[in-house]
Image 1 (tube, rainbow, N blue to C red):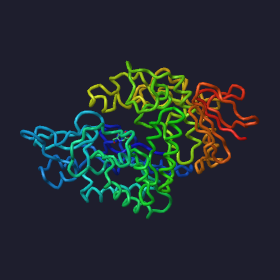
Image 2 (cartoon, rainbow, N blue to C red; image 1 turned 60 degrees about the vertical axis):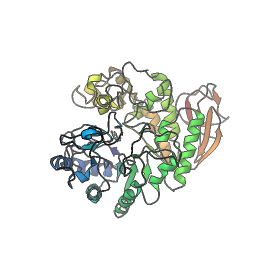
Image 3 (cartoon, helix red, strand yellow; image 1 turned 45 degrees about the horizontal axis):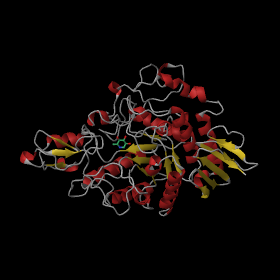
Image 4 (cartoon, helix red, strand yellow; image 1 turned 90 degrees about the vertical axis):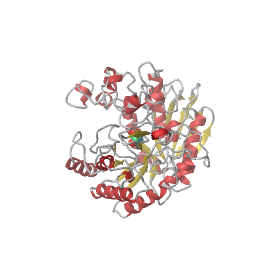
Amino acid sequence: MWLSPFYPSPQADAGYDVADYRDVDPLFGTLADADKMIAEAKARGLRVIVDLVPNHTSSRHRWFEAALAAAPGSAERQRYVFRDGRGPQGAQPPNDWQSVFGGPAWTRLPDGQWYLHLFDSGQPDLNWDNPEVRAEFLDILRFWLDRGVDGFRVDVAHGLIKQADLADWQEPQEILSGQEVDQPRPPMWDQDGVHEIYREWRRLLDGYAGERVLVAEAWVEPAERLARYVRPDEMHQAFNFEYLLASWTAPAQYAVITRSLEATDSVGAPTTWVLSNHDVVRHASRLGLPVSGGRPNGIGIGDPQPDAALGLRRARAASLLMLALPGSAYLYQGEELGLPEHTTLPDEARQDPTWERSLHTQRGRDGCRVPIPWEADAPSYGFGPTDASWLPQPPSWAEYALDRQQGVPGSTYELYRTALRLRREHGLGRGPLRWLSSGDEVLTFTNRGLTVLTNFGAAPVPLPAGAEVLAASAPLDGDAVGTDVTVWYRG
Ligand code: NOJ
């Protein structure tokens, strides 16, 4: 169970702006509640991973408040990235970097200095060349390890170290699709210096009893570069965003699966798989967009709308394919309901800083963060006691509610349960995967005695005579597997 940040925060970026790393925001409860939750999760055989946000703090963190109160050049400012500006009176930012959420990555203070924020202005970047910052995070890790957490999802793991000269950078900064291993690195991402930090953290975790893990959130491509984060003395796993971004075609899926397995095998780490999270359009909608794959940054009223039926059909096929792959699969709350993106969210309701910072050109990620429906007929679909929910839920979500799907054969929820049970029973996470076919339209592989077939093509594909079907993402037509369908079978 991975929890996104629950620490005291002004919520400038849904809690990824942490004001105090050692407490719980009153919005969510208390530290005692966190302790209880960790204990109860353990009692149920669940492990808990908390989100660690080391690239930046909140601008309301006591360190940043001290930095604002202190003079340029002071020790307080050395914990962050403060610089004088360029041009007459230093009125231009120190370099041309853009915030991931839009607009410049620098904000100027009344005393004339600028501070760096790769994300929102409420998220000043820490200076990881400062030993005090390193010591502080080792202590934060200990704080949560001592409370019994099983690990950390490390936010922006590829961003902590910046190239020393803070050189200008013209290219699109966030996603580096198609990068080759030895291409020049953007000066703010994936700098070699980050690895030393994770080696130190790994030594700390290894000193704790039980299995404690570090999981990198690093938007780094290609897979060979990402694999450097999971070398034996660094993190345990890294989210595989190249997989999430791959197009829904047989050649693209074959290529990304093969490449991912090879890259992590080369360093002896498990491969990971992920289709949805709180930063991307839910895959039940993404795969129904006119051009599938990619990472559209939010869908809103007036944008090209996904084909809901196509999206759900492909999402079920994609999830069943993913859950047959060796390695670790990460699921995002709501995907087990086949939940689509909320694409008709009123703009006034938006919380994602992207909407304002991009001057209303990017809708942002709110559409995948709407509280999920538990009960079709209850206020806020059972999420809370009243109809008020953090982001408004659309009226069309009753049909996705858990209580409409539980025990209903063929529902997306029951499909996930079947797949997860079989995955566990057959040890699919441990592999190995062997390809039987990798054509332009159909992929077939075996894993631990199961055969998995996905049909991406227009023509139905017959199963071999006598095949015993264990799971299918859509009903078969006799023995034929239709378009955008995955089947697990024996024989
Ligand atoms: C990645 C997180 O997943 C995202 O939600 C957040 O906005 C950025 N990092 C900044 O912390």
